Length: 469
Image (tube, rainbow, N blue to C red; front, side, top):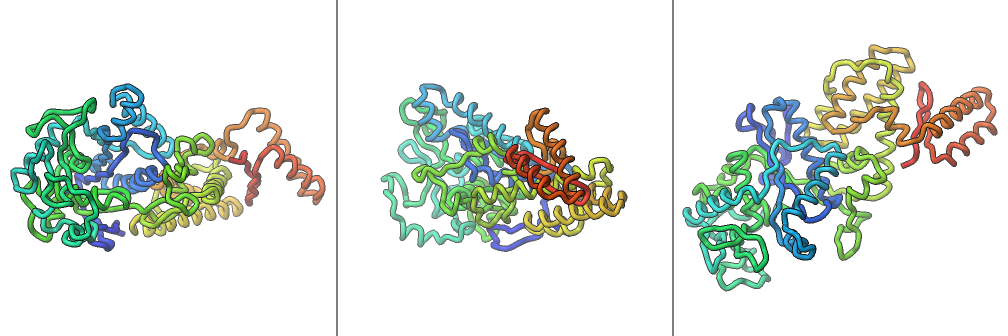
């Protein structure tokens, strides 16, 4: 079954065919490291981690090159550094480390490349000069601006018409701009801001040119897949294409976009209890804080619970359901702990789902089907069937980045030895009471377990338990 992905540019699902099967390239816009990432920022790295895992399994780990950039030059970084009286490098190092720690706890695999803007100033300046040389940008008052009228298919990715954008512009137009939607490639730095030398004076790059230059410098053009959040389609990715294409003189032609990226993928928005997250509403939720009370896999499962292109509403019910789903799967693995897993084959129903534009809800359903196979096999004493289902479950889960913990440790959680001994004794007493149909005693034991904040999960081969999250 071939992998199909929804291409934002073509507005339809397309069979994925890399330009070179021995060098599959993927770029995803990464963090701007001025603060902790919020939960919406965590959706792209988790979603595209699933894609990378699938590509690596399909083509070989050494055949896939995944780049996720780090924006370490930005107004917000400058503001925080000025406020704290420290260099920007101190701010960016602090929050990049926090980001990587959070992503690691969400089981996000490290990218092969993590290009930083500050390491690519020469490449950025060279690309800007190339765009000027091809007649698609101009220098004015220490700035360099991209001339959107020079690129005839500007707006194709986002579906926006340039004439309509210009006619409907409600922005204050700088006097040095030829038209309102020309955007900055290079700008002068303000006093006390970091700056770099360029033919147009000391300054720093605009946001959009950073990714274009880093992609070309690290992956070459065209790349196979470019990913990011739906909020980046316009203007960021629209401007990226224009820059990357025009730097090579491909400003004209309906297929000029293909000279930059062959496929475009974008994940949907994340809301919090039905509302858009914003600092003004005070509803910014940080994975860094969530991870203090929840296992990373619960958060990861929740982020994958809806199809990546669909909106996802984040709430406590979603987290509780995600925990229960993982408990069910870990419960099956725990009951089959003594049976060795069979070959790590990916079952057909899982492949059908995950290769259909990363249909994670369908992939989750395949995991549950395999856990049911394990439970039935354990009940019937069919260890061969259990072994086969267990191997498939672990293989499929590895693509999704879940079930990476020891089942017993997962189900018990972080508990003291004294609590573990007490709970195990209570479960034995409960099993005896239920066998004797001594329901009052069983109820008493249940109440004691509830008082200990313990959740009991009954299965065909016995009970497992965990401390409530």
